[in-house]
Image (cartoon, rainbow, N blue to C red):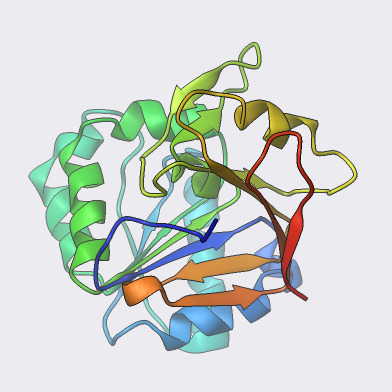
Length: 224
């Protein structure tokens, strides 16, 4: 089973987790920044609700990559419906969806103009980066923090689910998600590792990740 994403001319970047302030995502960030055209990089704080996250990330990209970061202040559902925020997003060459809680991200962005604009960004050749809980939200389903249930994801990975901050010795949660209807494959994505899915099935890998196409099967190792 090959990794699949919705068609389009852009890059979808999935990072398993890690603290950028400690250099844990530096290699992955170098790769996606190189693929990003000139212009500001948008930051969505929705999953964490933290303004400090934006300030630290902005300083990190300015100092390490000489790139400007633009805050897209979507904290609640009504923020995701504001045309001003859609305009901000569309003016960015890339959008970085910060980590946090997948429930918050999915509930806030569901069926909103911001989510539609992210899809257009991927289709038109832009870069969308999602880390940790945001990476999980990109799949068909995401694991809720409430009672172990599952939520509908963004659906950008047809038939696929992502388990971020993955440890292959603790695979129960990924295997459980794979038992859900419609799920055909799953990826265990450790912290600091990344999968970059580009146009025409292009795939770049940073670090090691694990793919599973049977909830009872064995992992295949990607990268290394």
